[in-house]
Length: 343
Ligand SMILES: Cc1cc2nc3c(=O)[nH]c(=O)nc-3n(C[C@H](O)[C@H](O)[C@H](O)COP(=O)(O)O)c2cc1C
View 1 (cartoon, rainbow, N blue to C red):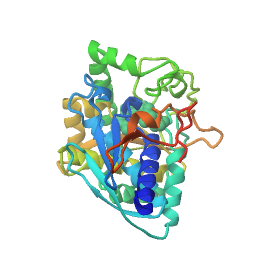
View 2: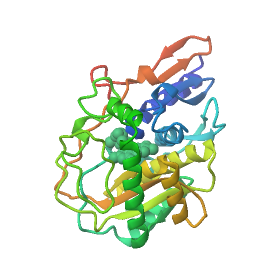
View 3: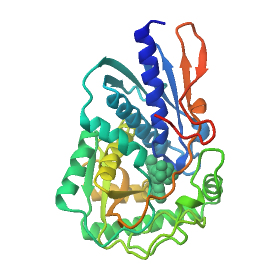
View 4: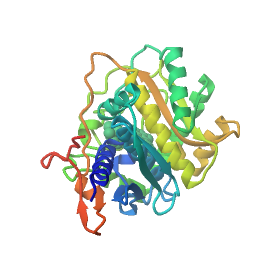
């Protein structure tokens, strides 16, 4: 391998490694990366798809989209200008570094946020998000390739009803409940799923309910309400696989921007997973688009420290490196003990 090829392979492995931090539905991490011929290829992994809760694979695609955006952030932070293609089949996407350029300070900041970002299911404070911050988040979402529709008060009430309805539909479906129990609760030593430490002790009493994972957590949720929270629907203009992938990229872009602004973001995807409530959310967009998921945005209590990290699969399980000679290695710079990425 030439030095240049070596350098590109190293950058791609690092990018795939950093993408392990990406958020995913129930922390399923339903992605796999192949580094081959100077490109990074992204594949969905059906073994880690929620077959009962997400038979259409929409949540899998959103999750793979967040990983795709994370990989791009890592490449930009290393100064690699790159090109992304989204065949949205096999592979879902490819990323090809083109040339090195000066690192933009924004790229460095985004990369830092990627390691700090968490799903925080504790209650938010009574401070509303400043208008200017909200405008900044809307712009970030659009830069990420999707749209953010901020809900009016009457629509928040409508969202609350849709969330309750979808929660009930999933709770009464035995197969979905069984599947959820496989991914949620306990210590999760196998590197996937949501540990008890990331779930509230009690699901907080809020206008729009958080997802009830039907599993008691250990996270003190706080006594706050969600009166000052902002609810919004992330949406796009199409309903094809490529649109959902882009939706995931935009979710990641929005989430990193929110993290940078000390805004907590909680995804509420339940109502999108059920066809009837997905239709309700679509109605809120007045026919202008397809909802990817709802989000709660709020101001964090500065006295709270970050919730604990959720586990990740070791790099060797999600990254394959195919060398020019056809040799396959399993790559990554992870800490062997914790499985934590070391980008
Ligand atoms: C597409 C998608 C949908 C999600 N839906 C929900 C949800 O409805 N409720 C919730 O509490 N968390 C939701 N999450 C957050 C995941 O559970 C979380 O990202 C995962 O457990 C990893 O934890 P982390 O975000 O703290 O790294 C969602 C995440 C993604 C990417």
